[in-house]
Every structure is written in structure tokens, then in C-alpha cells.
Image (cartoon, rainbow, N blue to C red):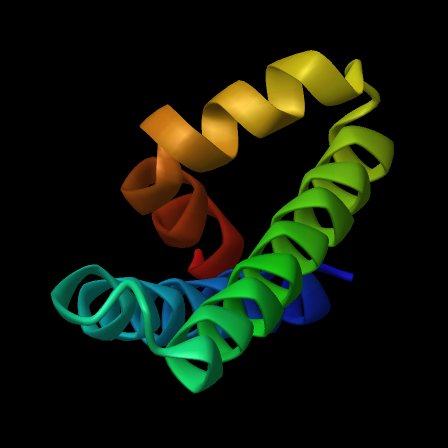
Length: 85
């Protein structure tokens, strides 16, 4: 389970990068419908991955999901270190 959570954290980081690039493109050209749709899809994928990995952490650590979400946002490097130990 630790390996799966770790892989999902890495996937989340990739999806965050994609969403950030899509957002930057959209901000440069807010009238561009394709950029808007791309950003919307990228953000939805990022959010889904964030919620999924938070849920996994909550189950694995027997904590509530709110705490798990806070850990993913604020303690990600520590989480990755623990999961790879």
C-alpha cells in the first residue's frame, strides 16, 4: 500500500504541473476556448488525484480525510520520505 500511495503522490505532482501550465496558457489568452477547456480538464484531473491520494492516506494512517488533505498539501516531502523508508 505504501508504494501505491507514493506512486499516486508522484502522479499528483505531475498533474499539478500540467494544470499549472494549462492555467498559465489560459491566463495569457482568457478568450481562447481551447485553453479554457484544457485548464478545466487538467484541474479536474489534479483535484481527483488529490482527493484519491488523500483518501488512501486517511485509510492507511487511520486518520480523518481533512487531516490527510492537510498533510498532502503541507507535509508532502515528509510523507514521501516516510513512504519510501
